[in-house]
Length: 505
Image (cartoon, rainbow, N blue to C red; front, side):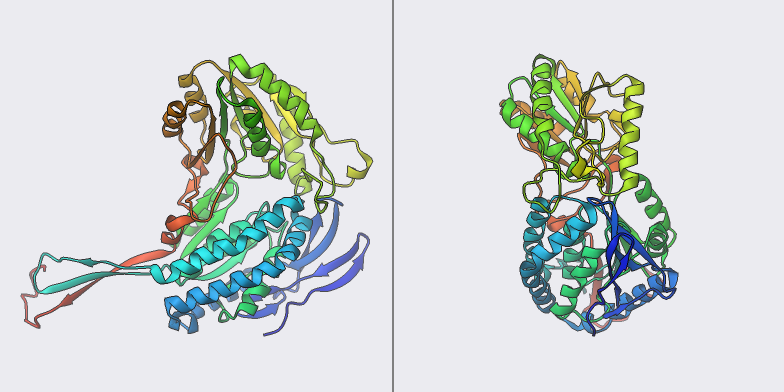
């Protein structure tokens, strides 16, 4: 096996890093020889290239994964699989800072967050490494006394993972770690905007000693992902991204009856009652919508505030939001980086036009900053809209940017009704000192995750996923491991007696 080719060259924008794909334990270019550029959202300039995988490259990766599924990988015991996953976790730790810098350069997420995410990756792999040898079947009392019946939990097979651009390695871990623990093999397709960190991570998989074909990475745009989800050699597709793309992935997978896990969009309600600790609640609102520049599926983009404290909450937010430090995402002092790419910036800007046309009032932000040092990047100010209602597009549709819509409510019942008046159901939060109310509302909200007096907290041992158009299935926790297993029932006849061949049982 050879090291990944990371060459450099000059173009009009500066130095470019040229990377290769990882297929069947080898570093390769696309069969076509084509590549594509990725852009640093802080500078607005290309900084790296990756191979543009075509159907032949996707087929090679899937074929490699299928061979590995019944090859040396299948011959390993569950404890040996766990040991390899644990070795990978150990290798991540000394490379965490390097991975964070690559990912921040690719997608503009601030280094203070990517460093925290990378520092937490080993724990996710350790958690599922420990679960690998704890996958048990059951013995089942058969109604017939001459049979011994038991179940086996077996890997679902070849997994195709189509990753998003906002947190590539963090979200890869929630798919790859349980899949490896279950005994599956894997083909990852990072987003075309952010391929570099996943390719760099593949070097660690190689160093850990996984057999060739167990983990593969193909790079490219939507056509590459479509070829992967449609490939008949794929047994399961796991996708994180927009709801529209998730629906297309599900349709494609259905053509060959591949199972799917979909973690899709959200329009999550963040609900503040009049008895809440307003300082803590406002801090939670900031975390929910302006952290990660609002580019997170769980963004608390709908703020529901009791009418009696509505104006005070808005005033606190409009004082606090302009103080957010925007700048170089590789600077630890920066609190909010750029939008990840130009097309997403255009989308965010277009929603401000839509909102104001609908009658929304922009009480904070609403434009690109005019600071000279931010001029080349895809920056957009933290933005707050009032005068909105739940029928407006800016309130109903996922913007995926630092745009907050504030809606007043009068009663608990109204808050729940507004909160649930959405096609999505990924996350929600309740801010109140009344513990009975907190639980009462948490039980009524239609969301896969509900926080009480907090926001944007996740863990590798807690299941995560959505209701409605926010997705299908769960990641993380034991539920996340179950998604990569299938059950086989085994019947053993104990007597050797001949039975009537025309009678069941």
